[in-house]
Image (cartoon, rainbow, N blue to C red; front, side, top):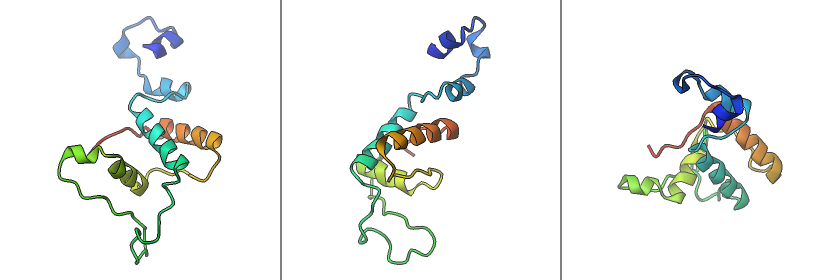
Length: 121
């Protein structure tokens, strides 16, 4: 609704696609705010640096963190599961060692342009 107000759009609301407007105004969608806050949590608490005992001893291709075992969908919502799953994703390219201001700027840009949204699956 806010995007329609900013664009002063008077036509049928089904005719206005909002994805280009989110990119134009560099705004996060409601479900992307979850990832934005999760990335900040990972960076502030330095969770992106993995202890050597967690990683696989044979890291020939792609070092992955071990995801905690879960039994239900409720377990997928746990913070430890979400952090591990997020750090194992290959489509997210973020430098967690940047300063907080530049980290937030790059993180927001990456989320807006790549259309990464939250899912528990």
